[in-house]
Image 1 (cartoon, rainbow, N blue to C red):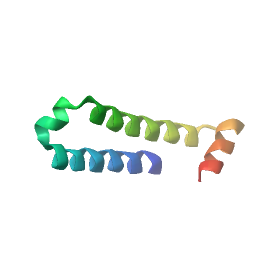
Image 2: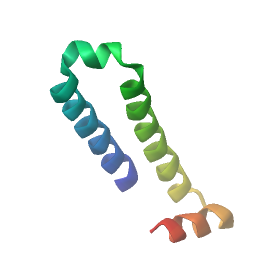
Image 3: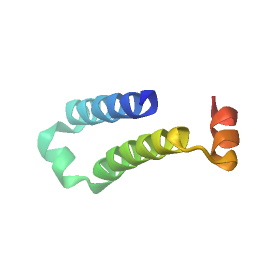
Image 4: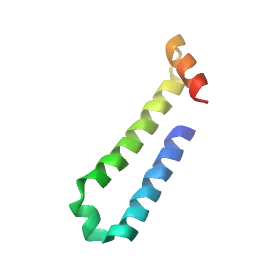
Length: 66
């Protein structure tokens, strides 16, 4: 759960700062900003899922990341 909250917060901060720099219309016209936000959310969901599974491989990877 902490992974999901941290990445959702990071995605929100990234989108807010991007809209402050490029403006709302600039954010809608630039596709890479949406890609970065979606990847941040997807990475958080993936890490949260991997943290909650019980297999040895994912547990070793999560311990290395922490």
